[in-house]
Amino acid sequence: MAANGAAISLLIIDDNPGSVELLQAALQQDGLDILTATDPEDALDIVFTRHPEIVLTDLVMPKMSGMEVLERIVEFDPSTDVILMTAHYSTESAVEAIKKGASDYLNKPVSIPTLRQKVEKLLGEARKRRRAAQLEDELLDSCKFEGIVGRSPQMWEMFSKIRRVAPHYRSVLITGETGAGKDLVARALHSLSPVANGRFVVLNCSAVVETLFESELFGHVKGAFTGAAQDKVGLFEHANGGTLFLDEIGDMPLGTQAKLLRALQNQEVQRVGSLTARKVDVRVIAATNKDLRAAIAEKLFREDLYYRLSMVEVRTPSLVERMEDLPLLERHFLEHFSRQFGKSIKGFTHRAQILLARHNWPGNVRELENVIGHACMMVLGDTIDVGDLPEYLRVGRPVVVSEAAAAAAVEAAGMPPAMSGSEVGSLEEQEKILIMRALETAGGNQSQAARLLRIGRDALRYKIKKHGLV
Image (cartoon, rainbow, N blue to C red; front, side, top):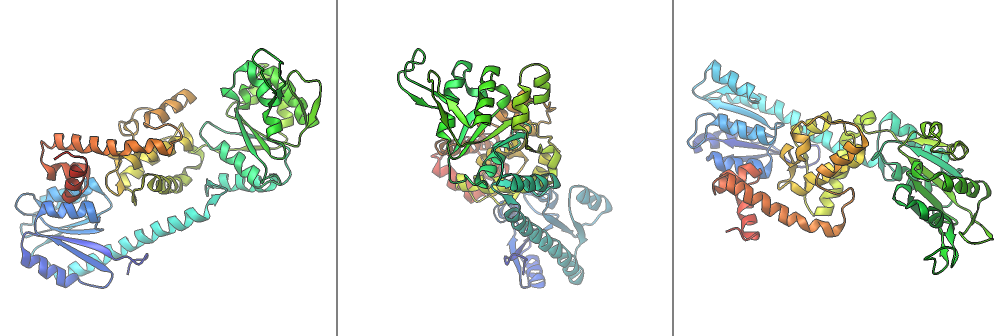
């Protein structure tokens, strides 16, 4: 049996029913599910819907040759092992088949012992792939730390530092590129701290108007300024007994930095317009994607505040620095979006994985999340292929590593950084548009459209009816 208990599937394609029956009887064994087809188009439907690991196909058939079948299968999933069989053997056709991705090329009448030997070898490889996928799932479960996924040395080092720091910190500085996961690090520090049951309050410093900064952090009393119609509790007081996370601390105005430093030193705050200081017990986590030392040299950040915050510094590695984590992160986001969209998506084709591995991810993990989310929304079958990925990844556009380019890359993925449940409603419309385009490209031929969409004809007919495209 296969490593995970499910039978491995093998598809036999031959327009001669007698040959199909002979091969089926010869290859029958426990743990092997043998599928058959005498029509090449029916065979491709089976490939798209059942994903057989091994395919045996005749070379010369009506409607479609075995070489065309090979091309279609390799285009759909290059990991499928295809063996071509023919009574019209030639060295040229054998070389062509191997170049196009065939695993082997056999002359008819096929030697049954030879065929069994070759199939058994391919079954062994398929079982190894199944086991590898199972181990990846187990590895993903064991490589999650407080919602953060990683197993690279850089991430283990960061996890270890978080564990050591969390019970004791009063202030921490988290550094790293945009999209690297600094917010997850902050939440991990809070959840492992003695104030885990307290509030985790977030302020994005880059999103606050400069004139309102002090009021946001420390609050104000009624009449303190025009528009102050009532007393307001600041975020420091709101976070009392918990953690205040100051994201993008490098964008905080200098005047507010001075008041923040006093609040950190004295653990007390003074509302705008009040003469009375109020004691608070707040742990402060600051995060930045900027070089604060350079900002200090340019008189844009207070040196004394920097040293107060950076008594403990946790650096979040960029995705490029830990590319060995990419497969884990892909699987993590695949599972997340499969659940969110109510789809059963098994994984990625090899060529899609290769394309993802070649990208240098200027937007880091956040960009990867958006790319996988886009692919999960667009895919119609159960396997994500290159065509399901955002266009900017597929066209090979050069990627620049500025933050502006990273933001543009995320936007180009076609999704906002965080997707709410209400936005998932566009999934049905996206599916309808894809089906309409495929039918138009195929000139109304449903079989051709199904192949373009990499789904079976029955699945396409159901979706056509569902969307009222009859």
